[in-house]
Image (tube, rainbow, N blue to C red; front, side, top):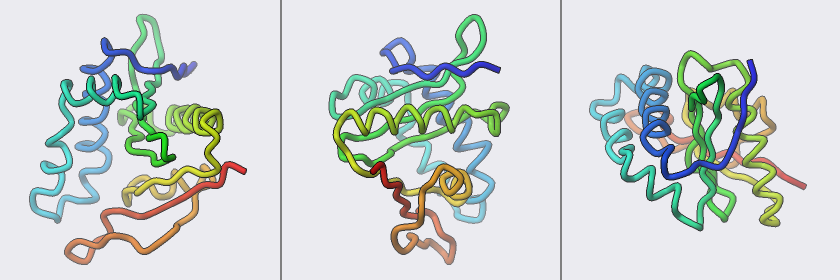
Length: 159
């Protein structure tokens, strides 16, 4: 399978939003099922209108992973100029096929062109092992809710 990563355009907002919502609900959601309302709150701002705003924001770099013909968006990611990864999601049927790795490689290249020396993220429990495989290390105490880690701070040096 060939994965292409490219900067998102405003026309990608609805498809990218679908990726975010499916990945959160179907991939990450089960890890947080015991936290009443958590996944619903997480999904609340994942609308096509908000995604279009994020894509258009010059302080952010929003990219999509595509495969197939016609082009199908199967992953989406967003990084702030500070180096904080705000989003990195892949739809369930493309997990483990290099889409997330390709998205992070693209973000890393963008961060380097911005002159950044590290990337940071607040990983989910679900994505922690993925980030570790990509060279990220824990960088602080997790945020805990009802005894469960919901955000795991991680960083990766770009030096």
